Image (cartoon, rainbow, N blue to C red; front, top):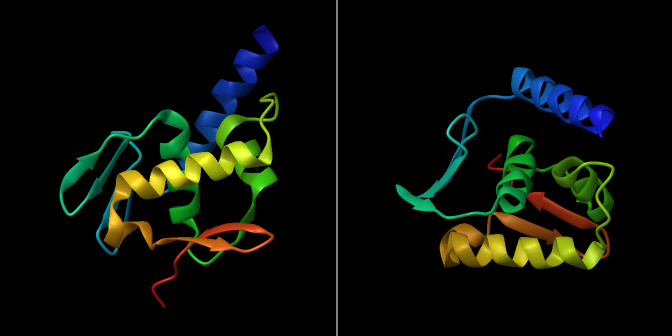
Amino acid sequence: ELLARVTAVLRRTERSSEERPVLVAGPIRIDSLRREAMVHGEVVPLTTTEFELLRLLAKDPGRVYTRSELIEKARGTTAVVTDRVIDAHIASVRRKLGVKAAEWVETVRGYGYRFRDER
């Protein structure tokens, strides 16, 4: 258990030093320091896993993540989660973002998900 806790702390420290604290894409604003996602200025109530998935996708727009990568990066290597659980989390994120903002989270059929690239 101690090893798992140390690994988790190191992972969080590593993650926070390499990322931008606020990501903005279209109507979506993700503030990693406040652990808050907003759409058109309104806070979106996301669970920890949903927030991590959205943040992960948004920090590298256009990059396609497999379901396995999303599980590992959002929940850690010790989580026992099936691919379809990620599908359910993504569906929940889209529902909570609303109609216009949900289109920023794209499905890559048969592979995984990506955040829309504005380029």
